[in-house]
Image 1 (spheres, rainbow, N blue to C red):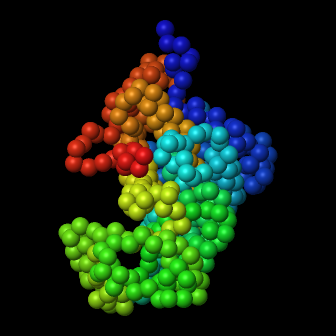
Image 2: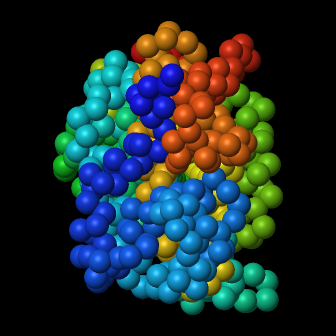
Image 3: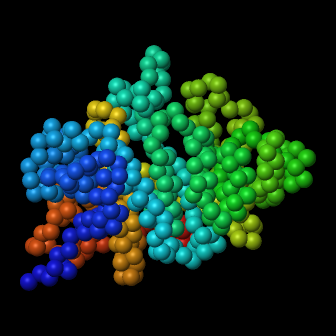
Length: 445
C-alpha cells in the first residue's frame, strides 16, 4: 500500500507556497475578489494557469478546463473571460511581488557556497523579448520595419541570483524600453558585498559609480567608445596601442570622460578563429550607422572587461571564466521559451496578455526554487552528475503525463518513482569536449 508521504504530488510545493503568500488576501486587496467566490477561488485560478504552462493552448476554453479540473467544477469560457479584466493584473502583480520578496528572504544557502564565498550574492541582469500580435502595439510598442509599421513586443527584464539559482526581480516593459534605460533597476536590489554581472548593453557609468558607492561589485564587458584614462584620471589611455605592445592588460584605470569611474581593466586575447568570427559579424551589421572602424575591428581580437573586483580576489583568467557564467541566464530564458511556452501568448486585450505573463513568471519563480533547487540538492546527496535545469524543464514538456502528476494526486505512481526518472534522464551528460554550467563554476574554485 502506498503511504500518503510516498504519494505526495509535486504540486504540493505550488499549493503550499501560494497559501503561504496569502493569495486570498491579495485577491481581495487587488479587487480581483469582492465577495466570497463560489467557483473560481484565487488558488484554483492560479493552478489552472500553471497547468497551461506545460501545454501549447492558451485559449479561454483551455483555461476554463484547467481551472475547472483544479476546482472540481465546470466553468464556461465566458466566465473565465470576464475574470481576465484589469483587477486580475493587479492581483497577479501582487502575487509575483510577494513571491519574489519571499524568495529573497529565504535563508537557503547558495548551491555553490565555496565558489562565491567572496560575495554575498551574485546577480545576473539581462532581458528577453517576446513578439506579440501587432494589435497590441499601442500597449507594447516594438521595432518598426522597412514600411515604418509599428510591431508589438514585450521585454522582460530579469535579475537572476546565480548562487541560489532563483529569480530576484522581474519587470514587464515595452521593447522600446531598452537595456540601457533598465540599467538603474539593479540599484534597488544589489547591496554591499553583492556582485552584479551584466552585458555591455547595461553599462552606464553613472549607475556603475552608484553601485561602487553602495559597496557592491560589478563585472561587465567594456563598450567601445568609452574614454579611458590612467589611474590618475588625467592621462588618456590608448588601449589598442597598449595591447599591441603588451598583448594583454590587467591594470587600474578611470573610465568615462566626465564620470572618471575608477575601475580595473582586464583584457585577454581571443583565439584567432573566435576573433575572425566576431569581426565577420561586426562587418555584416545591416545598420550602416554601426559599421565598425579599423580600431574597433582590431579590438575585437580581445575580450575586454571592466570591474572593481580586486586582483587578490580573482585573477584576470578567473574574471574571464566568471563572466562566462552570464550565459546561465540565456539558458534559463531558453527553457522558458522552449519548454514553458512563454512565447505562446494569447491574442486579446492588454490585461489578458499581462495576466498570461505574470502567471507564467509566478510559476517560473516557484518552479526554480521549490522544484529545481530541491531536486538539485537531493541529487547532490547521491553524488551523481549534476541536474540540468534545461533538461528538467524539457522533461515536463515532453512527458504529457507529467502535467497530471504535477497537479493531481495519483496513488498508482509514487513521488519517488517520478523523481527516479528525473534523476536518471535530467542530469548533465558526461562530455569531454566541453564543460557544462556546473563544471564552469567548479573551475573557478
